[in-house]
Image (cartoon, rainbow, N blue to C red; front, side):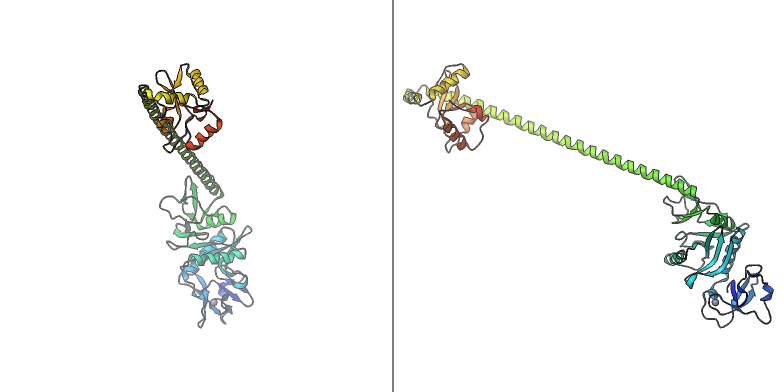
Length: 417
Ligand SMILES: [Zn+2]
């Protein structure tokens, strides 16, 4: 069944319009003899004007029609189309039923025009996939026609995928019960039911706009990806979501700064602990070196005093006293320590690395003259901390190159007389 027909002379006939949309009367085509020449606008098959038991006027295909989209449409579909057309007219617009687009790539159930706007009003009762409804919307949009989809089924799964609303019977006719929303900080709320005619008026005046919400829908209401709402609510949502994003950004920045600071402090603490550990190690090493020096000095002094009891060593002492430069070394040490300095009787002890010990009267080792590190090294010389004096620069240089490790305070420790 359909609500429109084509007459060879009168053109398009609309069963929902009082004058059939062409200044003609229903009586002229209903049960007329001979029958009026009515054709289906979709398939061109012959039609017959009929009235349903509840008084709805419509056109039925004559027997023998091939498959036709209009012929297959249900009574419920036609009733909803009629409701949409009536509401559009009541809201001050014009409404044409079953209008095909250029090249017949689409057919609008109701094509409404008002206040310079052209809107396809689609009554969708049969199941349709999300892709299907999106594709049909895009085909109309490509010809500059925006569309609104209507259903009076309880839960159309495609609701909100395209601009759409759900209708339900209410006092005084159909009402929009789902698809309208208002923003109330911080969520969207479903709008109370609105009569279909008033919704139509809002559509024509641009008072409601199709909008894709960013904030959630409150309570148990389905979250629709597209709702109808006013510009004021869209702006309220935007200022709220902008503010919220700004807060999120600020919080993230704060957290980042806190983390950076924490890492910085952790780094400082670790480096401080490392410094402390290093300081403790150095102190420990210093203490150990001090102990070694004290023991080495004690040992050297004891060795010296013991050697003085052995008069056979006198010849060795006298021989050493004639070494070139040794008297200058003795004078230097005497001046530095302000004590009398002489050649130690312990001369020849292997720990002096072939050098000559220079000692004070009480046997304290003050320096070693011209040592030469052998395979045994000169750990004792380093431990005892005595000044090393050389008769010439090349002797000092040879000593340092053979030393293979840096003596402490090289410049003072080793001098040339
Ligand atoms: Zn047809």
